[in-house]
Length: 327
Image 1 (tube, one colour):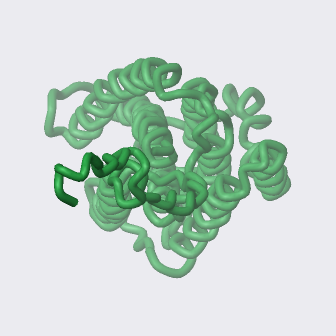
Image 2 (tube, rainbow, N blue to C red):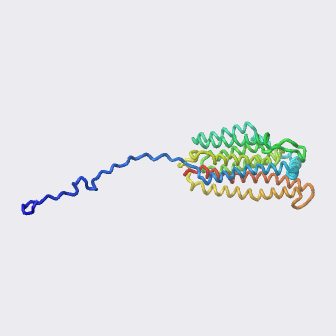
Image 3 (cartoon, rainbow, N blue to C red):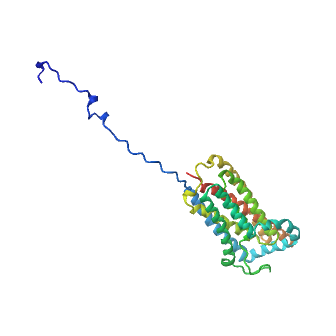
């Protein structure tokens, strides 16, 4: 319109324009509910568990090969038996109650107790893992002892051609305590590992002192339990890990580390001494009267039992904590 007409075109309010960018409607995208947290075991823990499984399997075979199929191995353990016979009347009464804990009724009792702890805590996955450790360890021990490994009597007469490796009594006790590691709260696992190491030591020492088993039988039994405990941590579904609301890592990391270091530091020198004792008994290290060899072999056999029991729980404690840690 010409300006001379005296009319001015009205200026539109930019805020009122329907196409103003500030007024364009952007619909809010639908809010999807956050998926529930699914705890997962750490991949590094699975790798560590697999390495432990392989080491335990190889260790079991090596113990059988060295102590059961060779002359030196059988001679050393025969010295342990001959010396144990000298003390059997003294040790029989105090160790007999310990040996009863490895009987079938106590196997069932331990199985029910471990599963009961898991069920009371409503840890269904952990209960399944613990049950697998108990059943798998004990079945493997019996199958290996009766159907896989063999013994050819090279030295001595006790169970000359009957394989006694691994020890069923030691397996019962060690498996129950290893399984308990998987169902108790995280803060209780360091104490459980200490108690499990002590109980396994007691059973191992009792079977050797009362001439129920050879030292190699004890070592192999503990390794079988280590194998199964590590294996369930490797193959268990991620959803079976500890819950996020369980004990925080900061509260359990220090006790776990301290107990693991203590058990490992305790077992290492005993393992070395047990090997040196076997070498001395065979005449490879030092010399002395004939009775020295038997006594040294006897002490060395007991040291081997203590060393493997404490080392086992030194490994299983941090492994169980790491394998079941939620992310």
